[in-house]
Image 1: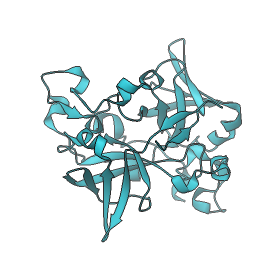
Image 2 (image 1 turned 90 degrees about the horizontal axis):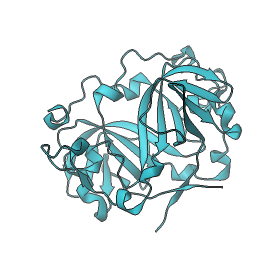
Image 3 (image 1 turned 135 degrees about the vertical axis):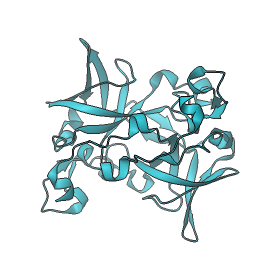
Length: 137
Length: 137
């Protein structure tokens, strides 16, 4: 089946309670201009879920809670999904030579990072977005 | 170089001024449970930028405006970037059998969709995010 190739642009590094994105040498200059942004969108490859069982997951109980309705993975942020891409909006704490320090991320030491995007309020912030009751219930 | 495989889960279809995400047969049940969400995060493959020149782009003038500072692609939403993944927060208008209708997307008819995620305010909405002056200037 046709597929697209995604390359790591860096890796998550967890060190001394701090969270870093270490960017590969060749992509370091991609970080220029991030100074003025307080928040970023980080896309990462959920490498531990890159297997046929996790990638074949179609429906899940939200956060494994069987008291909630069984829903499709596109209605959840489950790491088991057809393309194991994680997405987190994070606060940027520091920019250094070839790295970013961020406040937190739901990933492991060594998780590959595949993209970093600036958080832009006008398009990314929807204060009146509606959500189903089961999300909080 | 090591890479990860991303598969299309559907395609953008533009028809009669309307915007659809047509989901592949095998992933249709992934849509269940999206009813209660007003907004989605759509990840798509910018297939027209999947070439060495666009994927080798490190810095750009924001929106091609040379009066602005030259910045790294990780500080912009430029479609020319190491991994040509587009991200849009969209309003969901309708869910049908194997498709979603959304309000708009900055993509073409036939653009491959690689993931759909629910928009969750608690993690995705940052009303006080800060941005550099050049973004609006």
